[in-house]
Length: 125
Image 1 (tube, one colour):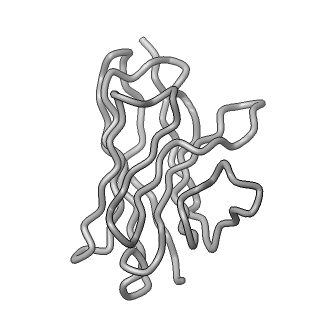
Image 2 (spheres, one colour):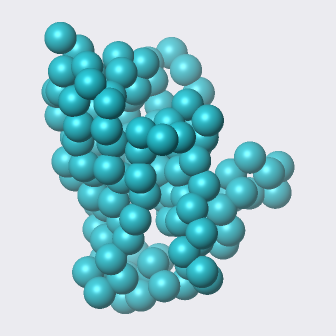
Image 3 (cartoon, helix red, strand yellow):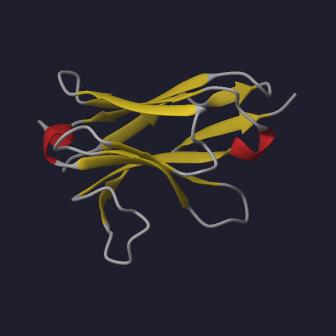
């Protein structure tokens, strides 16, 4: 599946916005696999944030980010995005992109096929 490289993290004030990107180096990765965003805050487990399917572009969101985050992808650029609006301090975490055979990260059978290295997002005034 090649490499996944995230970018776009940083420090932002509460209610601010950021757009994360995840570039896939392997040809047509985002055409063949579901693409996901996870995050891990200090002292907490990694949690699923959002997913976009490879088949029909269906999207899924964790309840904590619904209405604030938008996942999208550009298959021509093989890049995954996460537009984050109205950010809150509790969104502070390292954000990771991942690819998998399907989106259901909440399913016991779900497993990633690859991870990025992560990008830090800090929401603070």
